[in-house]
Picture 1 (cartoon, one colour):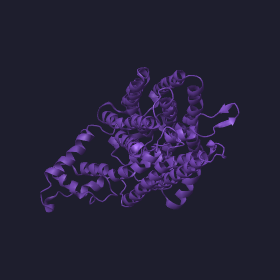
Picture 2 (picture 1 turned 90 degrees about the vertical axis):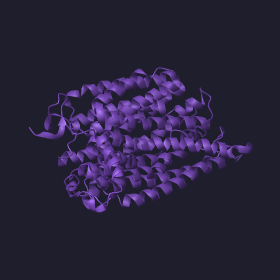
Picture 3 (picture 1 turned 180 degrees about the horizontal axis):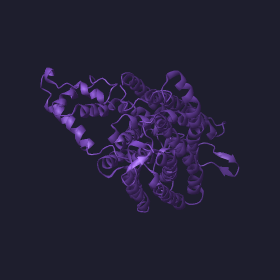
Length: 509
């Protein structure tokens, strides 16, 4: 039987293509991710309502706390990814972090939240990379399936999130907050059980082999480039052999790193360039990430002020409105994967239909439209509250912005996952996925910072804050317009850098 590329089984033997990995293992990993997403969103999706309700926090403080917690959760993967790629490996990291996730959810409330953040920090970057590792990038059919894997992983995530919105959120608001926060622990136990169930069928990456630690290799390139910065260009070692590693790529970009070639392998220099080349893309996605952070906070509070009744006896929980994002993803992912990609592929000859950066940029544009719609709806809502004749505005007015968020996620969220998996050196893919997650962490922290500053600035001298506890007196519409401007600038910057980006393609597919 044919062996796969640099992959092995749980005993360290070479993995056999027909009995390991592929969709057999990937489907199980998607189910694991679905159970984990149910656990996570069972806690996070209704957090702002819990903080402003039972804990009695102000709207601004609660939104800042939620953003800070989610931001911490999105930055911790950088630490765990280093541990996974340099020491433990992805499989063991998933086991350890999942156990933390389960065992430490029952301490003091805020302490518990940040312990959960630590557990998810290890689980999150590794599970997606481990799933993608089940496909051999050197095989044409499996390489195409790997691109599709990120779409279906997102499909599974959102299907699970929809269940969370209708089960956990309903229990939290109508039965018991304790029970509503306890169910996610059971779901995480199920996730760990399912993951261990597939151990014998997994492929384990063996790409590192006897090479030096990848962090040490790349760090040494930067150190040597600085040490050799005064040496004349004519003495820089010939780096033509790097084309053996990246045959498509010009080594002229980031040429200052070529000075490290005096004492570093040219292939290591190109690895360092591949990592550094990601920085402008990462930075220009921050405006999008700030907009992304609004749905679990202000969108939810916005919905809580509107008419949420379906019938006289049934009221929709405000957090359940977020399910429209997930439902949109569940509906649009099959359309994207089974219709859009094949049609686009016939024109572009790209296995993924469009390039990863084109996909990300399309989603960022849709997010700009979504926040503009949110601003317009909030303006109309405020006008209706000041009209003594007008009745309470229906919550269904919020559906378009939620749906557009979902469609945009199919492009940007999945696109960023694939981009940061594909464009880092193969030994640093957990770090690549952690870099992707850190975009959202930075966005949450920036959102939290902006909220705190704007709240203080707009409430000075007795004025009404943009984030007043009574949203009918607040001005969320101003905040949304500010975000629309910032995200437009971010999109323009992204397009500028994306235009000159040189892809790092380890294979020809």
